Length: 440
Image 1 (tube, rainbow, N blue to C red):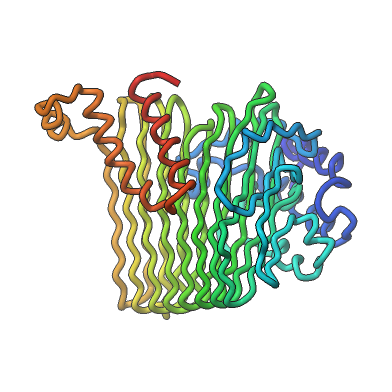
Image 2 (cartoon, one colour):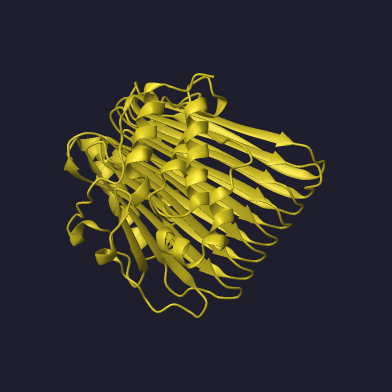
């Protein structure tokens, strides 16, 4: 098979030029892992709309881009970084760790919170299995590129029974200029451990041109572990944000993801969950806000492999201009996974005739005793509700804003109270001002 395409040649050169500066560069097995992933990428190529999981999301522009890593990092000023009170904060700019922006609180005994580069020095054998692990389904070019070019990342390990008092705040900054961020994060919660994790993806446009953030977050939840995970994507106009989240859940473990996706040329949050233990609980709340020609894509696959589990997915989108929102949600229930309760809900509001929302909820059920539902609606602001508000003295614009605030608040209120929810509320308010009033 001929694997000498322009994209393959470019990214091989990126790997050759930057290999000595990537995490674990002195480990032979890491270099072998990178090389194998690069060859898989070269053979597979970028996804096309013929690929079922990418049917409604076009990444042609990314295939034509020539993004590079390990360029000199220009840290933005400290005020550019989001703040969460008392959080343990790690900041990566264009894939490089910025130690000067790190904020740490005292950690309980046995907790490990470090960079991937440092973890490969401290415990290369322990970390190897996590980096070599590939998704059982849905592997694609962006995962391969991440494996080949991962610059750094976060490693968090929490011992059994330990509850972190303060959130872990993971900040990823993109700066433009065809710079790329390939980060690999690992979160391991042992039995009964509990953590709040906040991911912040932002753009500080220091250079002209698009940028790429291609991250993979691998999460392992042992029996009765709990992870409250918030993911905030607030990107610039030319940013491309692709976040892959792979979760394995033990018995009675709890995983909640609240995700906000706005800004950027493309934002894709891809969540794949394997409930391997009985009575596991998974919850996803995703809010997409799109302007102009932006694309916001939520892809989910929840695999119920053990009995008594539950999953709840609620996706909301508000779109203006020619923006597009995509929800491709799949739930699979294995033959022995009896007593599953799984629900999917997708709702979209279109503020213009050119906006498009694509929803494709899917159920694949092999068990007999299950309760699985899904529903999807796409529409415009309710004229009757708007008329009711205007009868009470509100202008048409005030009425529309009030209805949109109520529509988005349903998911905004699922974010943790405090700084995280306030950040989300402020971002949604700014977006509504632009969408309804045209003021940026």
